[in-house]
Image (cartoon, rainbow, N blue to C red; front, side):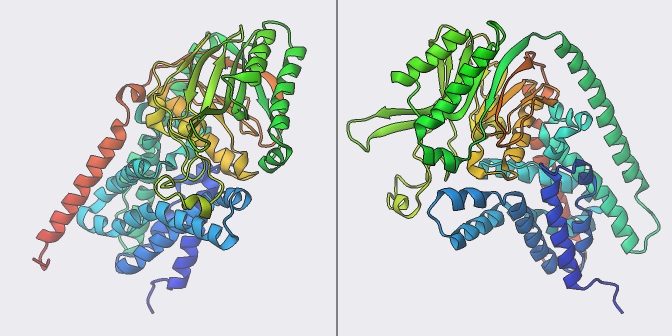
Amino acid sequence: MSDKPHIALRIVVVLAAASVLSILAPPVNLHWLHWVAYLPMFWALRADTPRANRWLAFLYGTVGVGLIFRWIMESILGFSNLPTPVAWLTLVLFSVVFGLTHLVLWPSVHPLRKWLGSLWILVIPSMQVALEFVTMFLFLFPYNHGVSQYEFPYTWQLASVTGVWGLTWLVFFVNCTLAEAMYRRREGRKDMPVEWIASAVALVSVVILFGAWRFNSVEAQLREAPVLKVGQIQTDITMKHRMSEGRKKAFDIWRRETELLVAETDPGDVDTVIWSEGASPYNVHEGKANALLGGLAKEGGFELIVGGGTFEAGKTKDDYKAYNSLYLFSKEGEILGRYDKNVPLPFGEYLPFASTFPILREWIRGPGNFRAGEGAEVVAGQYRYAPPICYEAILPGMCARFDSPDVFVNVTNDAWFGDTAAPHQHGMLAAVRSIELGIPMIRAGYTGMSMVVEPHGVIHSETQPFVRENRVIGVRMKTIPTLYSRLGNWFAWLCLVGSAAGIAVARRRRLDSPGANR
């Protein structure tokens, strides 16, 4: 009898492995499992079944991505006119497209192992980083596997050197090393990859030792840093409730909470109050909203940061400009600066191709009609605030464009996705920017998650979704220079070149082998 497992068992293992991907991320966040999470998938791959390897990889990627991003359904069903079957089809198509990287990676394992020997252990992690790096530009929605380490402070410090790419490489390297031992055992070999296992242990140990050193070094500097006292406000209403009650009642919630904060604190106890993305449904730069917001800031003696839409009327009803904006009011009640979101969210804030094919707006209702702002401008008051709005905070290139900020202020509204994993995952992906660039971040969510991320990645003052908060929190204002902030995505480029070189060498060896087709 053959010792090859039945294909049904391989499918079950692949489905189980794909399911694991979603629990590596928050809110479950079993980050320790990441160091062995890919072994079931490695087990399911067989050197003599390349065709099966390809469709198993396709299954793994599609199911894995679908489970991570299943919260997309909440927004589609709740706020668009698409019927349920079309909503499911949308999720499937999204999962197929974003899962294509797995179709590139996993079928390459055994060919690379055949033609490169043990060096495949280095090439596969580099390929994974390269794929994440390239697809970041193609899909505008990066998801880096290494972010699972965001709650383990010592390995997390590696991101200050390599960016999150180094962590993705490291967890895949450890998995590949263990997979090589598994493959050799499958082949009946007695020579275990001791040198590779020792290298993996040594590398992880060095990363942890460096992480402990950097963590303590940054913490010592933060203890001496000035503290910005921030009014953290968050609501507990759902988007359906907000839309049914009307914009005045939604605006009044933020106004009342700010007035309550003023009443319960002494003058000087609050330096800055932050209203999240979309907190003001009115034009902030004019009219009664402007006067009211300026008055709140002046009465409370604090700077006020407000997220809201900006509408500029044109000559006709349909000729207007709309922006997703953030405003900074001074303690005297004057507007000090405005930032318009540079990267609107496709299918959320605008409908792709709708200007070319207007009929799309008749078919698909729900997306807004916001334009892209121009320039990554900080808004400057007591400090220089870099204001990435919503998912701009998960785009490393976008955040790196802000000129010498003292702090990131990420206002966002994840209430569109309900009480799902979306706010947790969004917060995790945004937290990367602080440790990469050495800049603290204040994240203010309409309904959560709100939090502070420090330059060494420590998260505090974290809220839970749909829980009302109104309190003063402290933010230690200190930026820490990092190698990543100076060199950018150097490690990702290195992996891109390294994986291309590894594939080229493997291909050359295959072509030069006896019996190769010429």
